[in-house]
Length: 75
Image 1 (tube, rainbow, N blue to C red):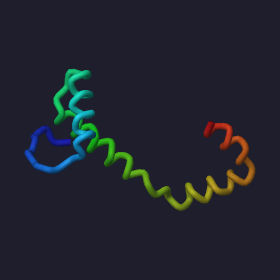
Image 2: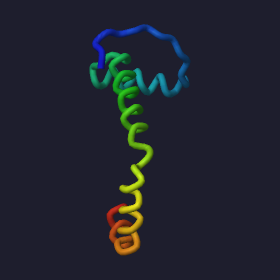
Image 3: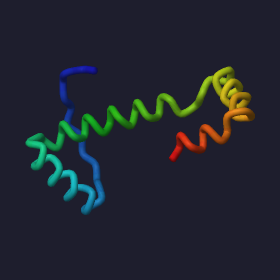
Image 4: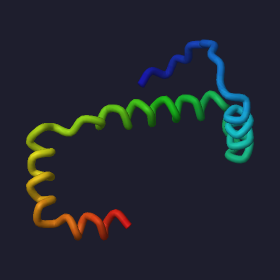
């Protein structure tokens, strides 16, 4: 990721912004560092949205035998 910052403007929910400001203060960080972290987390989360077909096929096959185990692990 680049080390240069670019200014941009947007709008955000008032309560969300208030919570972010409080979090930044509690952590001794600037809001921009929280925004960078949030953007990075969102991009990472979205990268893994679609499982590769062979991985999904293996999961579905294993689910036939191990569904009860998966349910317990989910708890």
